[in-house]
Amino acid sequence: MGGRLRVLKNTYHLYTIRRRLMTRNALWAVTMLVIAAFLGAMYSFPPAYVCSSYLVSSVFMYFLGIYLSMNLHAGENDVFEEILLLHADSDAAYYLSREMLQARMCLICSLILSFFPLIYSIIRAGYFTRAIMPGDVCCGAAVILFCGFCGAETGDFFHPRFIGRRYGICFAILISVVALCKQGLMETFAAFGILEIFMPPVTDSLVLLGNSDNFEAMGIFLIVLHMFAYSLVMMCIKILLLRHSRYRI
Image (cartoon, rainbow, N blue to C red):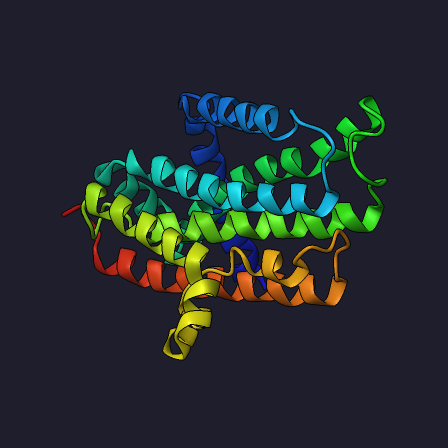
C-alpha cells in the first residue's frame, strides 16, 4: 500500500513539474484562439440542431487533440526527460505524468466546447431548434472528451523519438482522413470492415444518429467505450515504443 502511495505521490509531483513548464508555452494561447475561432464560426448561423452541434464539436476536438499532443511533446528535451525519468520512482510514474498533462488539456478544451452551447442557448433564446437537456450535455460532453483523448493518443503515437516530425504529421493526417471516410469505405467494400478495429471511432456517433436530433444513450455509451479502448491500446503501444526509443531519431 505504501509503495502505491509513493508512486501516486511521485506521479503527481512529476505532473506538477510538467504543468508549471506549460505556463511558459504559447500552446495554451494558440489553442484558446483556435477554439474561439471555431465557436465563432460554428454558432454564427441559426437555427442549429443540438446533437449536430455537439457531434461536429467532437470531430473538431479530435483534431485539436492531435494538435495538442503533437505540439506538447514536440519540444521535449531528451536530457530533461531522462532527468525526470531518473527522478521518478518507476517508469509508470513518469509515463502516467505525461498522460495526465495531455488529458488535462483535453479535459479543459472539452468542457469549453461542451458547455458553450448551453450558455449560448441561454444568452440567445431560440437559437437551437429545441431546448438543450441535461442528457444532451452529458452525452455530448462524453463524445467530445473521448474524441479528444483519441486525437491526443493518435498524435502522440507518432512521437519524434521514433518517427520524424514531418512523417509523424503525415501519418496522423492519413489516419484521420481514413477515420473520417471509414463508413463510406466499409459500405463500398466489405474487406474494409477491419477499419472498425484499427481506426478511431470519430464519426461513429454521426452514423448512429443520422438525421435524428436526439441522443441514444446506450449507443453513445458503446461508442465512448470503443473510444476509451482505442485510446488505451494506443497509449500502451506508444509507451512500449517510448521505452524502447529513449532518444530522438
